[in-house]
Amino acid sequence: MDLGIAGKVALVCGGSRGIAYAAAEQLAREGCQVAICARDPEALARAADRLHGVAGAPVLAVHADLATTEGIAAVVEAVTARYGGVDILVCNTGGPPTGGALSFDWAAWEQASRLLLRSVVGLTQAFVPGMRARGWGRVLAITSLAVKRPQGNLVLSNTLRAGVTGLLRTLADEVAADGVTVNTVLPGFTATERLASLAEANAARAGTSREAVYAGWTAETPAGRLGRPEEVAAVVTFLASVPAGFVTGQAILADGGAVRSLL
Image (cartoon, rainbow, N blue to C red; front, side, top):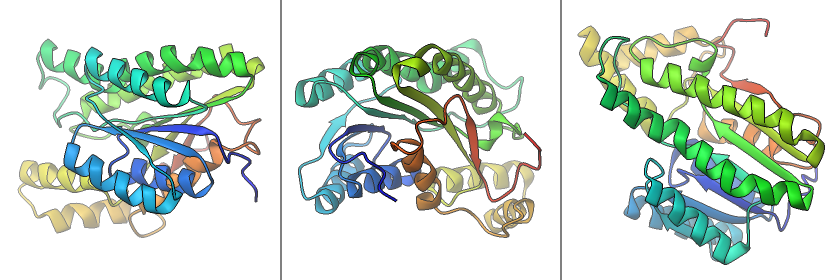
């Protein structure tokens, strides 16, 4: 299938590793001009080099912390200076600390909000007006199956990723007639560094082994295995495409069947 996005400008946030890196690579293979941003300068540089090899052209890599006003501004400024705007925006950041509903003071809630929600607000406010003016655009956020099935010991993620979903569902209605689609992708248990860190935290909390935690996640997944980053990235890439132009306002699971619901 021709996805029709060759030459489009794609910004993939948190694109130095995991699902977001896999999405950036797939978009590069489709001929997009790719920009990535991340907090870890060394991982960012490695990812940019790999993507350069895939795309055959330089990749814009912006070292920035999207949990800060300065980081958001740096990404917007760099991408606008290089490309004039963005056609495909993939919002993604690292996950917040683990903990239960009564675990955190308000400062921790504010920090998690800056990480997960404020970055999406700032980037959509910066780039969506240009999409609307051009009559085409794709906004995507990588969230979690926790939006539909909250996970134990992950209250910050459960709450704020649901907030991102509400924001983008509202935005989807407002921009659909302008040729801009807005969707979220909800990964299940996927073999990433973030899942490894969650396994360590859950194992310490439960007094068990990391291997036992992974086995539990596998047992919860009808596919009988963990997901691969490129499998989730394929959903992101399709939703960024021209053929997916009638899909908007959706929260789409890529979870091997782990969320057993009809909707």
